[in-house]
Length: 245
Image 1 (spheres, rainbow, N blue to C red):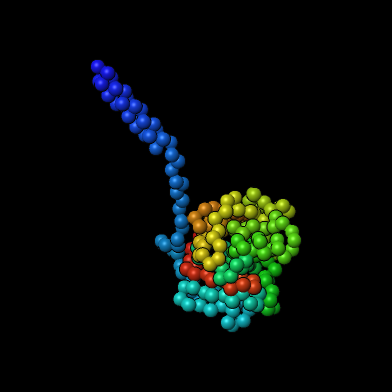
Image 2: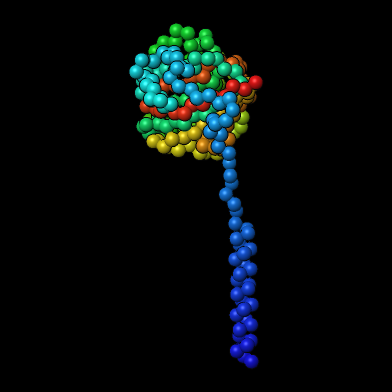
């Protein structure tokens, strides 16, 4: 009698443990999925050497190898698109080849700020989609003795010079930059993926598949797309663009 009772108890315990295990498995959070826009599909066009024009810099500042362009970072300046763009979306991979590297994309850069642009100068207008290595924060704080509160290294978007933009929150302390709402940039020498959508004066950035920052009411909202040389070696590859209505 005791033996049968013990068996029943063990069976009930086993069922109870099994039930708890099933409940715990059902309660485990599932991984959040996200879409990675890779530039494949109708109307996407790959950009290469023939699609860009040297605005300033030296002949050897930008060197193409297939779909990859290597930038020495010196002198400071930009490589601009051959065409002007208004409503577009584009993708690109980028990586810094040194810690604390600085670069970026200039969107909707007006022609007048590119004409006769001197060497070691950046355009005086455009919307910058920043490409900054995570090591830049430590370098800035060490060299300046100040906390790095006015920029981030995960995809800031902000107007340059004469251009205007209403940045999306969260904002930098002075309100001029759209700070990323989450951090997804990988440090040098890892490759990162940007997807940028720019329509009717609104720009949004996805970093490695996650939407992070943006802004609206850009002025001007048409112009050239530029790649930035700003003191450190950087590479861009697989730049693809789709023109939108």
